[in-house]
Every structure is written in structure tokens, then in C-alpha cells.
Length: 326
Image (cartoon, rainbow, N blue to C red):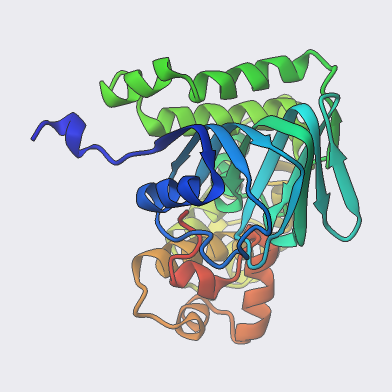
């Protein structure tokens, strides 16, 4: 068997299937991700392309008829919808309506139901919140301390979104599929392109920080402290002890963190510990959430869970159970 044949399937294609047949195709490729969804009350025709790889999905879909469905127990992904026809109506705390002129960014875990009307079709993609946190940390050169939030409604007449739509169109093309199968395009690179494109185009809480010129290199004492925290996430070091290790006063170190990390020492240390907790919960499923929290200095497991969900949009127990990966 060739290496191409062994490659994991990441794209499925539908040519006017009914919803049951499309669901069976989806389950065969990606598992029982949405098996807990209620069965549609009326027949639905589905055409298009859907791809999924390690916490990122992309799609170009057309839906026949008007229908609605509930969305219980959705995961920690942020979904970006670029309608090309009809309307999509998402029930959150308030309705959000997308059409050919209005795009939507929605937190899947906040969705209650979705309604598609007037022969809705769309380009779209979804990204796991944790992937955004990792990419932002790399682009900013420091942990993304505050939760990422995207502007819910955008004007698709803005030409900036044409490029985003073109990228999703390419991702769902036969050409991209062929390149991936021939190893001319790695799925990881396609995932990175989608994440970078939406961070650049779609307004969000870090847009200004990403456009801001990078500050000069952090002074030696700040870099020493940052490196120590990242190399010793389990260490219960205080700000005073960290200042002593860096050979400066506590005030000087606090000022340095505010200027070069954009956060306090405590916030930076907490985010480093949360990042380490995320990796531990992924790689050591035998460890309990409480054990991981305690090992990283979180004495209150409930408070740890609040910090974790605020940072990543998913509960630590869901990461432990592997429910975040798709």
C-alpha cells in the first residue's frame, strides 16, 4: 500500500446527497462528532466540500430547502461563516443573521440552534480556540493572556474578505486535495494559512496588538524572568523571588513585564502554567484535572477550571477526554 493510500482522509465531497447519506459519509471520515444532534424533521439536500484536520475545518456547502436544527454540546471552536446565498440564522443569546453581505463569527459552544433559509450556501471554516492561543503567542512573542474574541458581524462587501473567501475556495478545491495527497501541500500548512488569514482580516481583540510594531528586545532581567517561568512552570516562585533571581528590584521587574509582556508578572505566570496544563491534559490522560492543577500551583481546582475555560474556551476535563481534538 502506498504512503498516499495510508494518508488520513481530511476532505469529503457531496454531490446533492440527502442528509442521512451525507451524515454517514461524514461519520466514516471523521467519527461520531455530531451523533448527539437531533435528526432533522424534514429531508435536506446537501452539496459541497467539507474538510477537517486537527481542530480546523473548512467548507464550501450548499443546502437545499429551509430547515433548522439544534446544536447541543458544541465544542470549543470559533466558526466563521461567509454566506454566498440565502440566510443563516444562528441562535445565541440573541439572533445573529448572515447573508451574502454579512459574515458571522460565532462561538460554537454558545450556539443553541441554526436555521438556514432561501437556499443557503456558504464558504466557511472553524478553528479550535487553543490553536488561536498558540498562534497568537508565537506572533506576539508572549502568551495571549486575555481571551480572544472576534467581531460577530462583518461587512462582506469589504474587499479584505475576498482574499479570505478565495483561500477557503482553494482549500476546498480539487487542486488542493491533489496537492495534499501528493504531499505538495501539508495539511499543517493549510491550517496555518487559514488561522493567519482570519487573524489578519477579521477584527478581533488582538487586532491592534498584531498591527503594532514589535517592541525592542526585552532587557536581560525581563528575559531571564520569562525564561525561568517557562522552564519551571511548576515552580511556585513569587515576584520578589523572581526579581532576586533576575538581580533587579521587584518594581523594576514589574515595570519590565508591563512594558514588554503587556501583562503583570502574575498574569504571565498564570498563562504559562495554563499552557503547560493544556499540554499535560493532552499527553497524560491518566492524570486527573485536580492533580494537574495542584502540580502547577492551582490550589483550587474550581478556580483553575475557570481560568482554563476563559483562556481556551473549553473545560479542562474535555481536553483530558480528547473532546477538543476534532
